[in-house]
Image 1 (tube, rainbow, N blue to C red):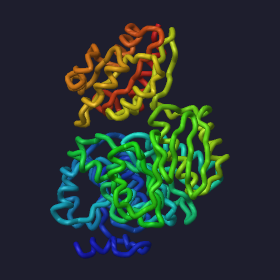
Image 2 (tube, rainbow, N blue to C red):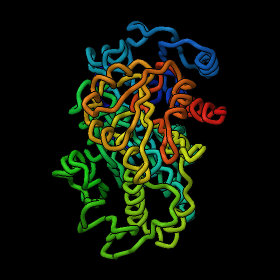
Image 3 (cartoon, rainbow, N blue to C red):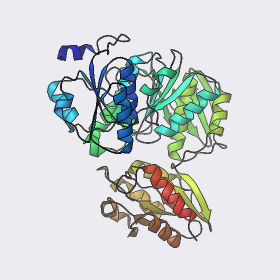
Image 4 (cartoon, one colour):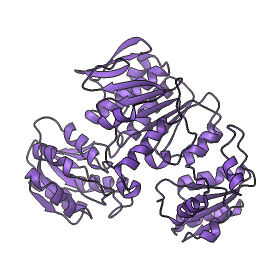
Length: 466
């Protein structure tokens, strides 16, 4: 059985999955799409899901009707025995029964994007990763390629799975893929022809266990690239520069502080690019998204567009058309000279730093932080909190940890029970010219279903202010 499992990876484009026992761990959207795809390929599909709710039961019923074997409410070794390949959903920990069993029995484990790469008819894969900015950059690219009328699909961590788009993919389709560290760490042959690394900072350490493991997962984006491929990398980020060492691909840097030989840089309110030996100038004045993080996202997207030979007029038009995404430094309302901003997607301290740097000069922030900690440190926020914040409003599981780690900023804090109290106290303590900023720096799962619900509750409470 182990020999057959190893053979799974031996021949590109001629992978034989028919009649193999494939175990899928997790029955969210990615797990469902993976199961659906493998069933059509004739695999013996086994799905194990530790949770149990109405959505899971509905998916289980549908897949069982197609011939899948489904286990819900638990994972057991007996169910997994005989597996020839295991495909975990993003975020399944190494300590879970399926992955521990796979390691003990040397069963190949791959992510859904690896499976997608193996079967994809297109090799025009543009993969974007980073601690922050992935969804925004991927979305900008999607608009650029649509405006250029190039066949393209936007997929991955952004919402719709890569494997779920196979039927919509032709050999000339550009696949614009948002790739998370969870998806990348279980790749083996995955090779984007353009890989983009936006930034690296502490995140998901509860899952990766160390920053080094997290960084190594991100670097797998470039592991199989060769001299025909391109790497688009943030020069201003020290960890990104480390990741750029010894790459085989052609490197294009972007920077807000320097002038790379190849790539793009910010100069005043203009972006200067040098790609393919041609210099171009792009205006930023009419672009709706702003701030340090978004400047980086824009430069990365421009470089990729130029590599793919999209004309400069289409690129500039796309930037001006692009609307800010919800929950990402989203202006909710201005009330009595106080601006309320929803940055609920900020689930790590690096995102909070970008948000604070994006507040208009001269404004002070009342910062709402807290939630479920991902075992990252908040100490690095101290200088910016000291400079930009007049009051901290802390909620959720991580509130006491944050208060302790940023106490040297010398900024007062108030513990709040819920988002309603946070918004009310924010409005009460704000003065004209201040910004009430929800930028939690934590996951949302201690109090909300996800960051979207958290952001929507914030917006609702802002609207309800008397």
